[in-house]
Figure (cartoon, one colour):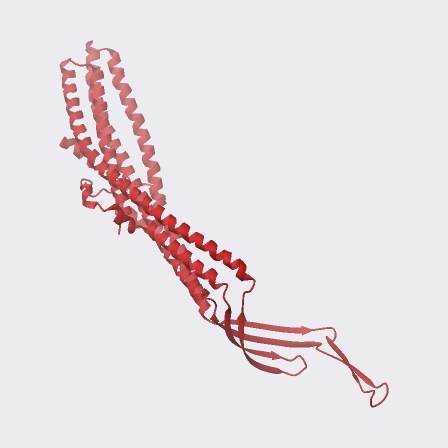
Length: 429
């Protein structure tokens, strides 16, 4: 490739405006880890799963109940009459009790056997925490992929503006030559109009590119948590384009390490635990407890300590519970089938990412050759025009082909970096 043009394309010499924030790709990723809303919500979801696990652990401890009752009725709730007629005919004394009183109690019940539901519930809570942790990592990968894409799209659009500026300078020089020729009467005025139309088309494209940069910068700023989208990119190692084979990983091995595979494994484990949970609901529940009761229902204080045992046998639930267990077994089979499907699709996805990465690298090589050819074609047509052997249209077409080759190279470099990051994400151990 022509060295001057290579320098033009890879320089990233955009002038930093006053107050602009200069960021490298690593800077953007670090800011996103701190400020991205999606990552914040994923972290909060993980925190919630930790609390759920702690909540499930409390089921190992005794359940404590406390009750208190005070009442005051308009009359005694228990009435009776003492009959002394055996001493004296007609002699009796009516009375009533429980007009007011206080009852208070506290009891603690320690579960002894709940059909394994406490242990199973804690295991399910642990799986929930593991899943939330995996979701955080998946969210991080998604954010990294998007930031990388926005970053390189911005760079590509800025480089295309640099390319337009260069082509515009060629057009400006050509216009001056054509204007002199028209004034000398050796060229038609429509040659001048063709050049001016081409300049107007360049300005139109420049405006579209600037609007595209603005949108991508807004997206990038939103992703990394900046209020301002007045961002300038800091480009490091732009010339570093290693061959894809350096990063190659066997797709079947990479699939085994994917977070999506770990998610479906967790789903299978949760299905197995749900079978145990539903089976445990059909078993008896046993517990022991101790309590204290206080009352003054009859006007005097009474204190009692008690110990007791509890037993609960789900008789009618045996029938419905059997269907619940069968349902969970079906869901387990579904989860196992889903794993097979996910693994196959992961291999396809990894292979596709590799093909895109590999393709973008070799398209760069082809684009470099196209630039050399287009540059030589432009040089020759420019010389032929000055010699009067070709028309302005031939020069304009050569400029267009050269510009097209430059933009194709820019797109290929951008695609290389985007595809490289996407491949590294799907093959990360």
